[in-house]
Length: 405
Ligand code: ATP
Ligand code: MG
Image (cartoon, rainbow, N blue to C red; front, side):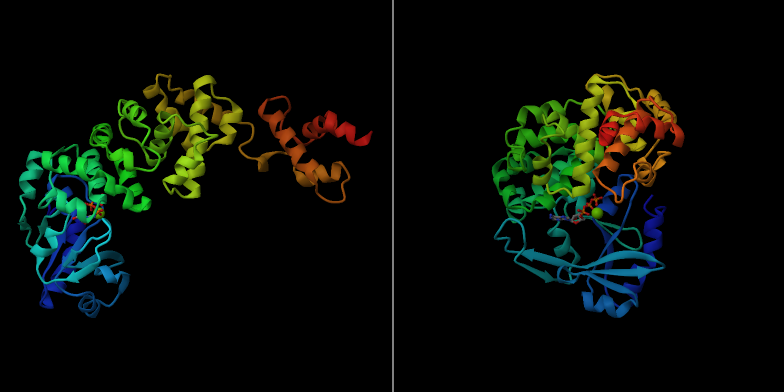
């Protein structure tokens, strides 16, 4: 199976080249785990005994992406590969950043610093799996277990506790009791971790196939108490974890989460800001939440269709059955097909036309007001979208008539 993965095959010449220069190099991390699970592999990481400078001397096209952590990006045949020097980390005084990173020449040392046994596997160029901590056995038993003592490992880096939740969602594995106990004990340390790092794991948790089990574990361990604005949301999180929608997109995940947490489009922004979402995601989530709630009380109409892109509407619509409402995607698509206009630009009477019609010297608020008035009329099917009809319609509007009195 591993051999048949195109990504590994493509990357083998890189490993070979490093070996030819007298160093060790292996595939490591998630790609090894996923290929052993017969899951699709999206990117491969390479670990090596060569230092970043030594790697840069071997390859012609390299890019420093995190050289202080030992990572160099190498380009071969147009594809970028992250190559990271074997390293150990020590003295995590603040529960989040190693105070020093030392490069080492030993693969075992490097694997020892990794979070879980299933993530601490390496694969050699001749397809041997290197497994110092029983990772393959844990894969077979479907068990998530810390490398070494869970308490120690979570004290070094508190994010690992949340990563455990994330891997439960992605893999639907059980968690070793000692690892769970360590989360219960050290959960408060999560508050020292940058929200951006937690967010990455939270999104992966929300979109994973076993998110409900993962969210239950998040609640059960008490780790949720130290997540942004979740501390008082225990019951709502548990309700969310009963939702039967199979696998959410990132967009759907935020919308559905916010719905279960009791937010509305008017008051959701502080929550999303606390999770450090980009303005784009924030706006999209807010709009999606508004649309979801609008659908609880209203059938699809031209106004709703005009206000949201079709793909967004379909994603929101798909959530409805899991909330006890009927999915009317077919009807929705027909509404979009029959939309008289898809944007203001498609109005047959534009701002310039209005300016001329009203004989205005320069553009003013009346133009925007007129455009909105015409758009609403077209969407309400009170007037046809032709230049003449729109002109007559506008001239008969009270707010326009009043201009001349
Ligand atoms: P994914 O497929 O979602 O990328 P992954 O296992 O590759 O999963 P990454 O976050 O990309 O996860 O990390 C790559 C590898 O680096 C992990 O498999 C693990 O060995 C190691 N790792 C990442 N974060 C940590 C951490 N906080 N503590 C210890 N090891 C870590
Ligand atoms: Mg990865």
